[in-house]
Structures are given as C-alpha cells and as structure tokens.
Length: 277
Image 1 (cartoon, rainbow, N blue to C red):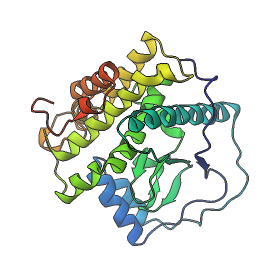
Image 2: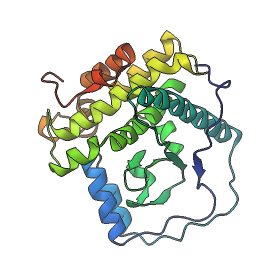
Image 3: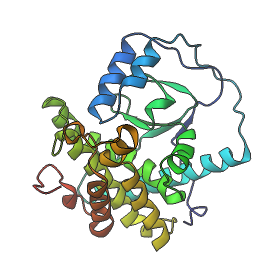
Image 4: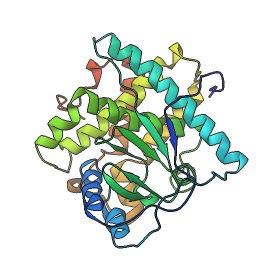
C-alpha cells in the first residue's frame, strides 16, 4: 500500500498526551447505549463507569517512532476518505462535512460519554467524531490475525462510513426504529453498509494519492472476515448464536466490502433493501 504521497489531514485531534479520562456519570450510560446500538459490547463501557479515573490533561505526547509512523498513516488515510467522500457526495448534490478523528490512549471523553480502549474504535454521532486508540492495530494483527496496512485502513474507512450514514440521516432512521440484533437486523444492516462504504472508498482511491494492489485488497477482505460475528463468537464462546449477531457474519462482511470495491456507488450499498445479506 503506497500512501506517503497523500496529503496529511487537518482533522486529526490528538489527545494522547496528559492524564486519563474522567469516569462515571450519565455520559457512560449514554455511550454504552450507543455502543450497544452500533453493534458493540457495552460491558467494557459499563465497567469503566464504576472505575475512578484521573482527569484527561493536555501534556506532551510521548511516542515511539513506530507510533509516530502510525499517526502519519492514519492522517493520510483520513485525508483520502475526505477526498473520496467529497467527490462522491458532491455528485449527489450533498456537501461533505469532514469529521474529526480523535487519537487517544487508554480512555477518552466524547459527546457520547466516556470510554476505555476496550470499546475499540467507535464513531460518536453526537459530536461527529471517530475515535481510535492506536493500540487496536496491534490487537487487529496479533489477536485477530488481520495483518497489513490496508487492514488498518479498512478500520478507519469503516468508521468514516458511519459518519457518512450520520450525514445522510441513515443512522437517525435506524435509531428511531429501536435497537435490534440478530440475522437481518437493523444493527447488522447498518454495519454491513459501513463495510460497503469502506469498500466504496477503496474503489475510489485511484483518484487520490493512495495506491492499492491486489495484496492490499486481500488484506482488507481478511480484516472484514476476521471480525464477523460468527468468527468472533466461535473464538470467544465456542459456538455461534445468530440471534446475537450485530455486525454480520464473516461472509457477509466480506461480501459487502467486496461489493463496495467493485461498484463504488452509493446506490449499490442499500443493505436495508437487500433480501439476501
């Protein structure tokens, strides 16, 4: 994956310096509800609510050369999503409002509440920001076996996909119907559409200064497969429980990500109208 010629984004909000995040309060419950709705496990958030923490500060950022490299990578992938979505939405007569991507360590405060790194990457619709602890990349490659830079880019593009859903009103429509889980649920369809949007971004990178090859695309497909509900359930509890699906199976996530890469259109990603996911 060639990415160094891509411009850096001006929308990185680096909160890795200073103290920890303040815990407790109603904000935690709000975030737990949002994480649950978005298909995540709210248990780490609720556990965080009961843990006293120090207030987050604005001290100097200490980082290794490897971490500094990751920040550069995230910034350039984010700027590529900005270029792609500005062009795609402009063709539909919609102005793309660029989101911030917040980098944090251990814990963070958002408009949706406070969260620990255990939550994983997430998007907060209340402040229109994506949140990422760079340590998740180690988990992605080490625990989940999704290696390669494009696997990491897929994670970023997926969260930005949720931002696009927020801008288009999709998220509000789904939330108004209430949270559901299971095969074919609104939660699963929302996540699969974000996978499609990640693929759409990959399709349009040819118009940016990020260059992908077949090996990169395979890494993205592997990442989508590694975080399917059935795969994670087998790894975590030894069995698959379809009624508890929130993101879709590995096959479904790969299918919609691949579809986005192949079609590259907004219309092709209507997971809510699809009978066969």
